[in-house]
Length: 443
Image (cartoon, rainbow, N blue to C red; front, side, top):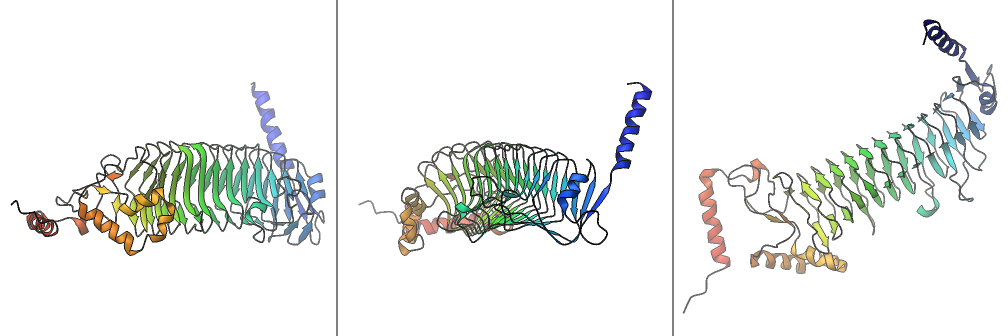
């Protein structure tokens, strides 16, 4: 490119910048009383500022515009179709309260906002009384951030839309949104390499749903008080890290489900107070590292179709059941690189103080083995029958051959026994064994 040509390109860019204009909508002295005529009059790159007020119209944004609400104006759609449709790339929509989409009666994804172009930003909006909240379809590199979305709670889950729905939409960024009352609060479908970060999703069927969307990063979110916290299906290489998955209950209630999901990492999440904390079905070669499973009815349910998964450095505390196997154990590893897991039910000792128990820990209790093949047995989980079965299993002294944590972790300060006391502890243990299992006289 010659110097003259380069100079012309720079001058053209400066001219375009200089010609960009800010249009005002609503109130005294504004350019327009409504938003639609401002969109028609504006040129690509212009800014439209919408002052506080109520605007009853549907919008189609077909040129690159920044549309900003000042003091949260309310945009109410006609009740047919989508309120704001963005078809031009590089747009920004922020600062609005958006209501009044269609109700999906025509099987269309009627939404508060629908995006079908690349590189847009939808930020700081409040959406309510809409079927779907924000839909991104066949588009990439959009940012959906800092929005508040309320679903149609008065309807059954099957008749609601989703909060943020990404369909055939790779590499989009969903961050810091607050979503409640939806069918699926955040739904990645055929949307690989997406990111969901720092969102709060509650009171929905699925707080997060990921289906056929490989390489999704799901980090630092809260998924709570729903039927299922996070449902990951038919996907590979998911990274699910530092999330809080809480109080997802009911008959089918699960905190985190992995169904036909492989080669993924679930790390440093808090999975607490769920009916079932983690359910793994048809999923292989996943790593579960440094998670906290606490106060769940069942911490982990593993189906026999879940093969060669690994658990290390996780903490299990105050769960009614730690692990339930439905079928046989299909090669699950309960330690990674010599580190097992913390179990509050572990009854072994750490004589050398290295933080690893000196005896293995059976991760599935005697009663949980019955429960794995007969779910009705759970009705008796806290009964004297269950306690008696566990006691008999311990006194029997026979270690199971499957589902063993060979390197259970213990708290060094609480469970380690100084070397000078190890011999005394060993003698006490031998005395207890002799008292419980006296030898028969040989006569």
